[in-house]
Image (cartoon, rainbow, N blue to C red; front, side):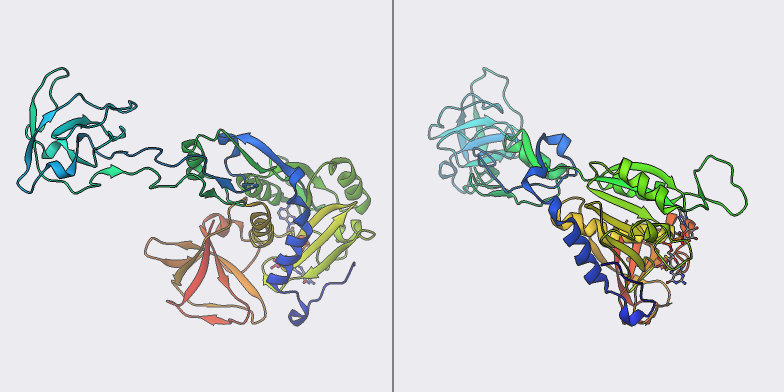
Length: 411
Ligand SMILES: Nc1nc2c(c(=O)[nH]1)N[C@H]1C(S)=C(S)[C@@H](COP(=O)(O)OP(=O)(O)OC[C@H]3O[C@@H](n4cnc5c(N)ncnc54)[C@H](O)[C@@H]3O)O[C@H]1N2
Ligand code: MOO
């Protein structure tokens, strides 16, 4: 399935088709033997492996929304009523039924006594302060419709309802819900382990000397950080030389047990495309996606392990991650969370190649306008670092004016 790249935009693969190819490649990651049960907070950022039904209702019992008096609404006519105060209902207790003609001091969250159907907040009572414990007395209360300040049982979720559906990305709110339901552990997909290899004889580690003609490896840090932030386990294999034998050996020794091999660089049309050469006898396809940046891509398997080859330019790497790897994992495993598409208005005009989906970088301002940062160039790391969104210009759109709407993804 090895093929040659197509420089002609017309023969390039669409973004949607390549996204589907990446999703297909990673499909085996969604299997029952790649799930595990974890204590709630350890499951932060993971995708839920199965539906969760509520084992109890929330709230589990009708309770008060205010500090005040639990009453029978029928006891209080329009003019109000003076009711005898009975012993208070603190939160956590199981109260006696409320006798007609009485009012029970009740605290927020405490169970509504049987017979009571409304709560009058203490501020509306006369006197507007609770009696000292043990003191007998009466209180004058205004009328309250049945249900006032009562949080009824099951009003948030009823026992048996779907609490969360499979594929939900577990954030603080979802984990908090499971805790509220009394569930201590949750079955999630295992974290995906990626072997990350950057390539190129021109690339050296940050911190080392920079000889003439060399550049520092930014892709390794950029992609490791992007994948860690997305909850993936990242194994760094360092920088491979431009020798295909070296790269193959490195992938064989370090790729053991990885769910995905990800390389950067060496996939386009140069004379020394190490990744292409290393994959020569593997079922890997090198192609051009109708996207800028991130056009040249590799996809297939290396010794049976799923493989993606991102292009060498740093911005192309991040765009490739956001356009292909994140959405595929998100759809298959529920995590990382998909980017939320937002609409924004361009602060200035732009042009874009007719047959490519262009992904520009920009700053989304609070008013909803987006200012592009830097030009189209996929080497513009500084401009990327000053951006907070990716700006999408779909294939077929060649010009946009200031004020035109675009889709943006928050980074
Ligand atoms: N004749 C053609 N030339 C190129 C084409 C093409 O279609 N025809 N495509 C261009 C595009 S678009 C891209 S993107 C690059 C992709 O090239 P490779 O994936 O083969 O990557 P390299 O050639 O190795 O490097 C490209 C660029 O990125 C820099 N780089 C590489 N690795 C790193 C790293 N780890 N950290 C920072 N920067 C890195 C490298 O120095 C190059 O400047 O090909 C175009 N050419
Ligand atoms: O597609 Mo390349 O990724 O524009 O720079």
